Length: 209
Image (cartoon, rainbow, N blue to C red; front, side):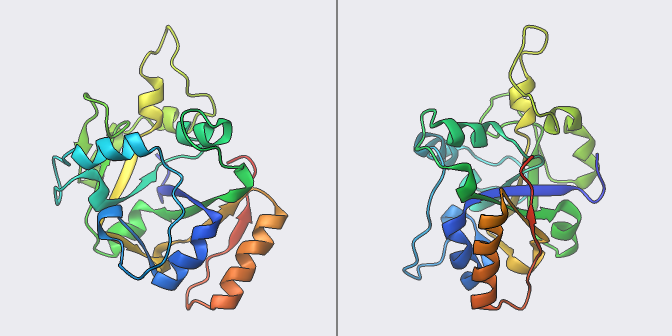
């Protein structure tokens, strides 16, 4: 387990101005009614199932009461967006990573929960104590290849271990922004320069993500 422990949220690049203007990432059930349009990159059927899935620890509620992160990059969801498999295809250059750490979230006093696998899987376990981070399969989380195999039919579920922050994550807790190439970096830097937020995380070119 890396310490500090990074957490990654993928969003459409068009959402960066909205997030900066709001000063936070908001959970779907707690998004401000400010007339701004958020560009979704999720599977609508999966999100509907998440609305019904109760969170069994921490502050409770359902999954959309939380801002979701992964513990690693190159997630199965990113692959689906790349290929358009049962979702609207999104060019990889339009995906950006917003990166924080478990320790930053904890230090800010925010309520959180996390899982040892995909949040909708029946046998995924839920936790709310950082001492239980050892339950996450860090080898699976950090693997580039995550498909199930005859020798390991649970690898894809474990790869998708999730970290969820209740209601919202302040913008100042985003420590880094990862982008595919220089063109996207310039685009995000321009947004940050125009909006001039008091907190400006570095924008890094991370094609391996």
